[in-house]
Figure 1 (tube, one colour):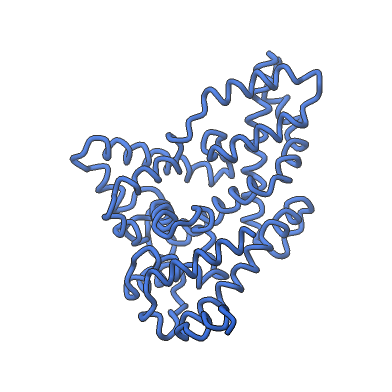
Figure 2 (tube, one colour):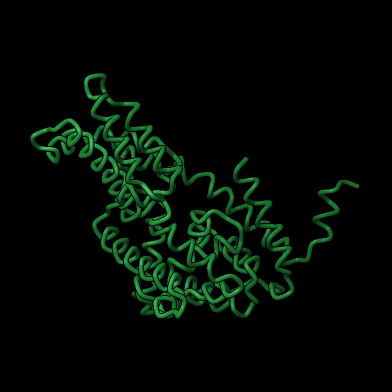
Length: 320
């Protein structure tokens, strides 16, 4: 008998439902890059909200502005800001062709959308959550210091998202390098020297571990078995919750963010179960994130290891 048939026939009904929903979610994931790329390039906002598209374009444009300003300063231009404004549109268009960089900014825009929705609907502070407050007050000095740095980084993230900005230093290492590469590839021969000098300075100043995502990751890692406390979005706040969900369900953080979208309900449910939450606790998280959605019948019988297997299978297919 075919192995696929055997696997499907041995599945509980709820697993079959979730697998089917996850497959639909995978189709949506596969369209995000091409659709978003088209909208950003053509200003057609019919499929994505104006807010998300504008925020992604704003962040990409801000990245371009920072690199061009650094280049102008290295060239000792009289007006670095004016130089950056003059060439920003061209570099922005070049950066928008990088699917991974755009996807990262898209995830940040979705995270901020979730954060503001939770603040408006549930009065969850976008910066200082109860968990972060407790970590800041920790008796363990390194934990308290990291939490304080994360608090400051989250406050800056909130301010910059309102202005649709993204500092180069906040990019993960992979995306930081992609941005620099895209910039240097389109620099003219006469500007190559100043651009290379600027890129070297930016690389020297870059430290992924002190960025917001690096600090959140360190906090979550330091919690050890206590990470379950970070999987309560009302207690942890969106930022720590998403980092904890990614770590505990063994997904990239960007995918954990996308899992909170209303087209990825099965992915969110499976990620929370794979992370170790009990069904009643998962229902509580859905009350905050998707208050009008109920878990499928039989979900309470789904084991955490089976949820992890289903999730891992989906991630592999999405990456293929």
